Amino acid sequence: MFVCSLNSGSNANCYYIGNQNEAVLIDGGLSCRETVRRMKRVGLSIKTVKAIFVSHEHGDHIHGVPGLSKKFHLPVYLSASTLEHSGVELREDLVRIMRPYDPVRIGDLSIIAFPKLHDAIDPQSFIIEHQRVRVGVFTDIGAPCEHVTKAFRQCHAAFLEANYDENMLLRGSYPYHLKNRIRSQLGHMSNDQALELFVKHRPSHMSHLFLSHLSRDNNSPKLVKNIFERVAGQTQIIIASRDHETKLYHIREQRRYSIPSFRQRRTIATSTQQLSLFQ
Image (cartoon, rainbow, N blue to C red; front, side, top):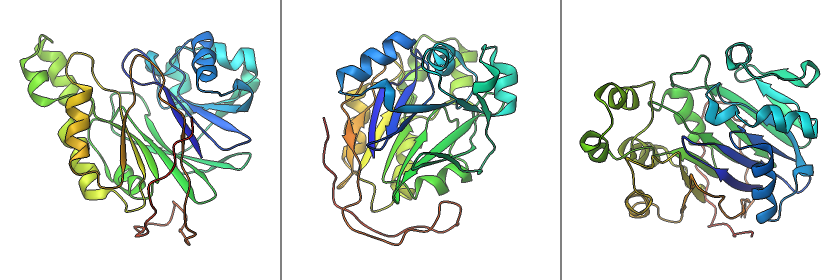
């Protein structure tokens, strides 16, 4: 699997995940032009993208979706409630309604959406799978619910929200009501919450963790990366920037294991060595 964060933050969110032949975008918060520009900088072509999956209706996740869909004739997968409340104009023939835990096939990719806690009408997280390798997208989450923790345990790589440092938020200039919104179970995850999820539920085969949706005002990339690297072991920690794309990473299984379907509720206890970087 080839994975890249094109942008991650309250200004825009967009993640590229695919194999050698096809890929999907999880969210489309960047403009059409900027999405294509950033993909080219890491050696990717928009022609490999076969669909866009929308996690929820907030503007930093859907701003560029109509333009991308229209220009490149990309189907857009989202829940019925998200479509109703999004306010975006999409071609009817390019709309695909997705349902929780109902797998979607895009070529050789399998994408499963499932619920999460956030202050949106019907927010979803995702698992993308190809040849037993799984990549999760867990951002815009107020607290890690059972759906998220079970999915996280199966990932070889994951985008995990680490939005704010608790002390920086409390001492910062945000108004009280906004601080409460961010800290609520329908807001965003703190560094401490993300770290607890990682320590308790990281599978032994997780090779890459992308710390995502960092606040510009209430977090520090250096701070949160240092916190995670202390306990990361063989898992590589990467910051998904809110200002530019990451490198392109190659996630692959080094050894063959019999891994059960994501829909089977059991924890996988396999291990793979750290995987190579593909630029």
